Length: 182
Image 1 (cartoon, helix red, strand yellow):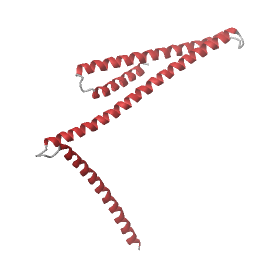
Image 2 (spheres, one colour):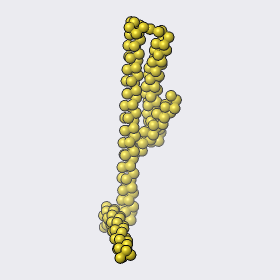
Image 3 (cartoon, one colour):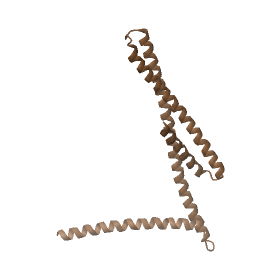
Image 4 (cartoon, one colour):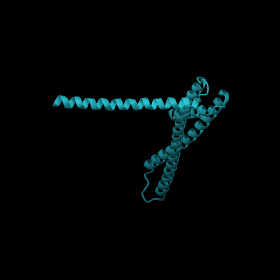
């Protein structure tokens, strides 16, 4: 149980860290306070769900023990009452487990969105750094955006040239094979 709480706390802290990277205006102190509050809230919610699940499990175990010790007849009112109570407790446990799974799925979705946002942020940061570098290197009336686009085109052409060379190498090896078999 403690391991699950630690794991959920770790997931909450990870989520908080991802969200913190996106918030540029926050200071470290504000960011830390917000992350701590989020982690505590998540930990509290997880503890409540675990407590409810443990209560349901204990109630189910209690009913199992009572059923073995009472030796009730199948048609007796006490037996029917015990089955109804057990069914109710089991349904409650199932409901709590479904809520927990839904919460976990939502958390995992949020973490995935955060990671996707982080990748987009990194891409934009690289673009900005490239633009800034181009702007610093500008001489005369050259637009930094033109430099960035030219660098991109050069990379694309270089990649295309590599593919052409690979195709030529494959074709040449095919001609060598056909000449050697003749």
